[in-house]
Length: 267
Ligand code: ADP
Ligand code: MG
Image (cartoon, rainbow, N blue to C red; front, side):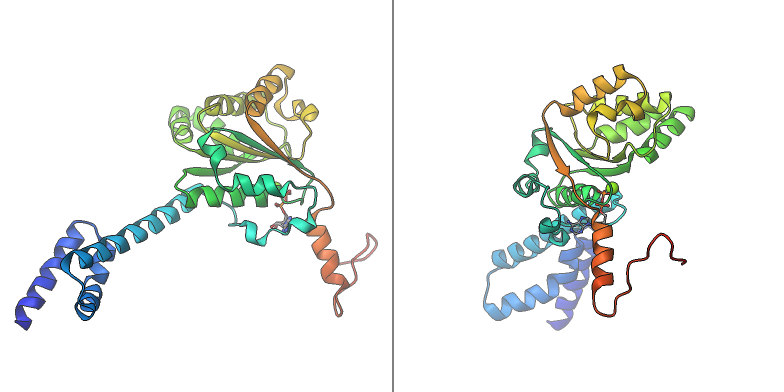
């Protein structure tokens, strides 16, 4: 009897592996023992195993999506201190965390000076979208523009654009720190207009709208880009002092902390 059990277990494991059911493969013996102890019937046993496989499969897929999104650092809202940044519309951020805007193909602009939490919020929204089954990709604008130019030179542009078109959410971080070349600005505009009403876009920028021409070059291109981005768009303003700066000052004020260095201090 014992021998048959072992044989069927070996065969079962083999089949589960062939069927690509790793969690069932891993847990079948333990769950079988538990079900036997609980007097659970065969269907209950199978149900438990299937549930475990499904939960694990979803977790694995979420991890894959998170990896594919290529966030520079993972940030969540739990670590975001809304009190430190009162200008940020908290109810709107919480609403956006539910990802309805992605289903509606709406965009989000995070506007404000440096260090005010724009990238943090954009990343937290992206991470949540991954957990909710959305395909997300985070790009620094300057890196995406370089990638687009290179892809065009290598005749790979169509391929890159196909990849982008499969996304549910495209995050474009730091529009405005470096002006794009004419070709770069046109390629970026192309990405934004292809995404229009198909893929949600989150843009973080330190530039007020009237200064976008500095990055995109022509008035015409800036107008057309803003037109697409701001149609069906949420705007979050992050104003105030840089969190990094504030945090550094706070640390140094603590007993035992160093005094903030002044411009005349030597390192
Ligand atoms: P920005 O993109 O606006 O320049 P970041 O989002 O990169 O700013 O924020 C700079 C750093 O400060 C990051 O490490 C971020 O996690 C942190 N930070 C900014 N605002 C807050 C906040 N309100 N609560 C907690 N951490 C914050
Ligand atoms: Mg940033």
